[in-house]
Length: 277
Image (cartoon, rainbow, N blue to C red; front, side):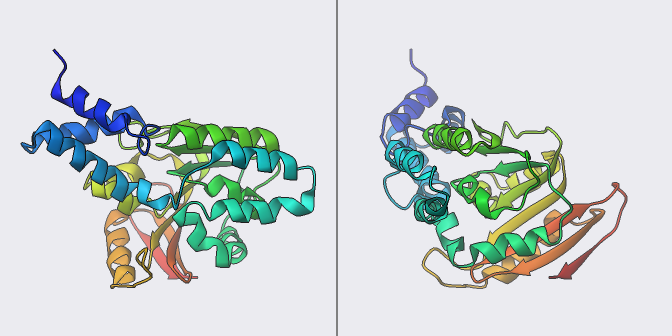
């Protein structure tokens, strides 16, 4: 007999919008929704709603990965055509689209606070790896990008090969399968609020598992509709709670719609400092 969790998971994955999402995440959300006493039909609807709110809502339209790859392959030999095309593709994901007006300033200000970076972990990466031409890494730096959309990860792996980047993408549910290999830098960009919609303690859990000497953690300072609604003070207080007791130097940088914390971890003793950049 088919279990209710399996049936709900299969129904969700059978829809085009969610078919590429990591099955283990869909299964976990389905189990949680059924655990609330919902019927299978109600659980399918609730699971889809959760996946939309925490992930799919940030995809601004149909993700046309084969066409985008073909465009990149055509444009790549012409160095002058690369960045304009990449900027256009970055508009397809709300998180990176919102960053485009200050993209150069964003990474320049962040990396001015960092030593040379040779390895990067990009959590819930979205299309952020397409911004690699703007990210001042050392030559031959390694880049691990993880997200829940398998079709997106396949596209990013094709991009890494085309761009000659020492990178790889992996489809992962970081709530249960977070990479723990040591890296110089972890990028956790506007990710924690999304994860905490699914699991309340996800932010603390994630930060405790990642093995990176430096972290760049950001939060949205405006809603998707452009309203502030006190988000800066709320997320600043939340991040202070998440890092309470850390031996770390934390520098805050503010951009038009994004609040960034650049973290340098210490040797594990108590204490730390926070400054504005």
